[in-house]
Length: 320
Length: 320
Image (cartoon, rainbow over all chains, first blue to last red; front, side, top):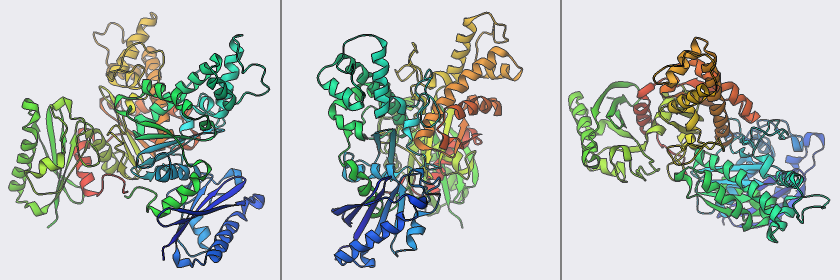
């Protein structure tokens, strides 16, 4: 009988769980609510309880569980310690594998949730077949997950892949959520694109279907691009220029085979890439220009895939 | 009897060689000329001949050689293939360990020379004790070598750590050696610093001991800084701002514990760091601000140390 792996993705509203075969097939997936009260004290017991219930339902014994992989919404070091806690769910710093080990006797690995999603996309999604990739998440913010030689790049303090905070614009007057000014995230996130659009519209009176809308979103910008709206196209070009410049900087550091673009903004589809790739080619070092751009494929399931993947594929980090 | 390792650093003028104990002690070092004629066909035979002569001199048998590490001046992939050749010494692409294997029956590892130097600084130099570091070489150009979890970051096409080609300035009108405009290297290399100084001097008539010099160099700028020359200090501040901004971008990608600053420009000493660190702190993501800045310690020997080190410390790359 084959063994099983659980992939867990702890989010601010729900915890996503997946039961995988040790060969990497997703057999079942489900969700439980994230109970954030009392500094999130119930979350891990709830997760383990849900896993145990699934094991009972399926008749899976502990010795047939190869491991549990956990993606957590905060910086996680190579030992699985949530080094700075996880503000969104009330967690203080602690070691996740040790804490889960108090409830169940199977191997546990913990990684940052964005890194888990990146790993998932490399293993079974848009980056399949590559072992050097950068996953870029364009959502409320701009996140990144970097895989080098098949291993997640964690960094010294868990901030590896925080590419949304590459400084791009000296003249910026508004602050990024991180406190700095001029971060990539301020131009390439969903909120950043909407801000670029508002700034562009305020410049002059050029007609655009974006005018007069109650709220401009990244989606409304790309919808307008698709029907040929010139102002929207200018905004998309600005977005592409910033993101292409930022990713060219990333490439000069880690030289990936592929960029996998995901997050809510990526729902615009291939047209998004058509604005990013030419700018990337313009700014990239010549030896880095062969990097491919693809859309993420696993959507919200990337996290459970990646969490299971780091268990299945052995060390989640480089050997010493 | 202990075993031995040879570290080889192939440069455009000389090949540096080092004999190390397997514990990492440098026992002897010497140089041979780099014979570039005929597409550098004599270089590897010369290297192996020199190693064999040393073995004979010391009475070291092949079975007592744990390996030979080679740093080569071009992009080298994880299998030791010089993927794009090495223009400076006339080499076309080939697999270095295989080629050396035709002459001597010991394990061979090959890496890029800048990466070897970075590894050397991590192992026995300024970055000793850290396993996540970025070595920055400020010379004619700006080079980088990145170590992640103790392994050299090579990248998909050997361009990992090419941090000198991070794009920083949209308005730049002159071209970088790479063909792009506005690369970090154009402001933070020895030639870049001299250029910043010439541009600053041309702006106005502010008195400076830099005026009237035949040729302004990075050294003359930092010498002037040390005696309080205001124009030179302005130039050093510009240099520090560019380099700090570039290294903050690097940190948002790989989040190192330490930056090790080497190359000819670093001979200015600690005062150099006093211009870079404040700028880095200004632009860096908060979780990356703990990175230390230190000067390189091994100078021109970093390459032989690093080449030997990747042999001694096992895999020069992350495990899959």
